[in-house]
Amino acid sequence: MPDSTDLAKPAAPSARTRVKRLPERGHYDRETIHAILDAGLVCHVGYVIEGQPYVTPTAYWREGDRVYWHGSSASRMLRQVKGGVPVCFTVSLLDGIVFARSGFHHSLNYRAVMALGTAEAVEGEAAKLAALEAFSERIAPGRWRELRPPTAQEVKATTILHMALDEASAKIRTGDPKDDEPDYALPIWAGVLPIRLVAGQPEADRRLAPGIPLPAHLGAFSIG
Amino acid sequence: MPDSTDLAKPAAPSARTRVKRLPERGHYDRETIHAILDAGLVCHVGYVIEGQPYVTPTAYWREGDRVYWHGSSASRMLRQVKGGVPVCFTVSLLDGIVFARSGFHHSLNYRAVMALGTAEAVEGEAAKLAALEAFSERIAPGRWRELRPPTAQEVKATTILHMALDEASAKIRTGDPKDDEPDYALPIWAGVLPIRLVAGQPEADRRLAPGIPLPAHLGAFSIG
Image 1 (cartoon, rainbow over the protein chains, first blue to last red):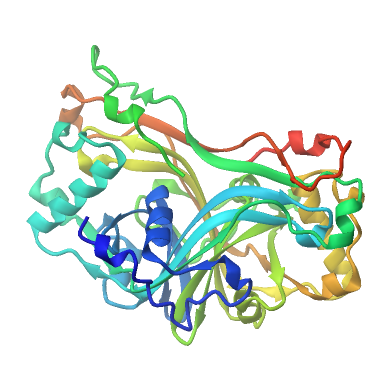
Image 2: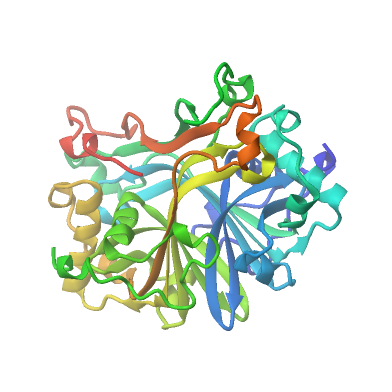
């Protein structure tokens, strides 16, 4: 783990990423931030074009203290973001709906990470292939070497960006509702409805050639 | 349905929201956009402060051809966005991981909506109460009238924003992988791993007063 020595060192919470409201929900240590990032699959990337913010959902992965995302080299988001413009990288995982005794104290349980910075492109075919393999291995360990290998043209048509988690914070809410003290005596049900992402049974491609078994790496997949 | 007559009229896809790459994934009719929004619970709101984009996850709801979100009047996001600055409102629902025969054609199945515009605040206690009730009824029909009623102070401390879906698009991917034609003959498993959000068993508040049954409105909840 190249970043293991960094885990004790908090990511510097800047004035821009410090959780100001409900500060008890803010976390700045790398271990917490990495754990949330490793439980997710889709991030929301924010960027600005001519004063207009855009928020694009896309798959991502983490290596050390950096996040990666990728896509077609023709993508508007990737073309804009690889130019070194300011980016906001946000991951949120919904864990539950918090039902309180008053409307005001209803809430969500969640884990979220917000990171600010600028992204840069992974350059060179070898480095891009290594990054793509890391992403594939994260989702389905062992699958990469079973696939039809990437062509040079495919690698060229893929843009991969990465961004350091230098200015990042996590925000977490867990547990029961926090009601006003007198409201606890009211005859109103309160509690949490847990929500989670689950993977179902794999569905074979209708054009799957006969006699190909389901690979073990799909059974091991977990998310959330 | 106050907006039913609008369903046939596509939301105008502007140059900014038209899906340019893979245009077959783009949808602009209100019925499609509304259905995606009604299946979600958490949006990602993008806004800009001093050139820096921020992406904040928050709960939302839809009424007619508008989306609503809310929070503490002290929230940075809400204070910034209610000033009428450009906003990007994005909802994404992950439906599956698409395993192809080459790394290049791996993909995600998803439904997403992106809307651009400016938000405005719901003003006045009665209008704010009506909006909060609509949100509560969407999640747990019948619960609102069982709760301890909101105080004037609570309503004042809550900012509710809404934004028209005038400039919006949906992007959807479904179904099997789309592999290169020669790759279909390869002995590689391909297909889709479905992913979905599910609600678990409700967990009662540890301070729940004795003898309060689980209300029926919680059993009816569905998401995704």
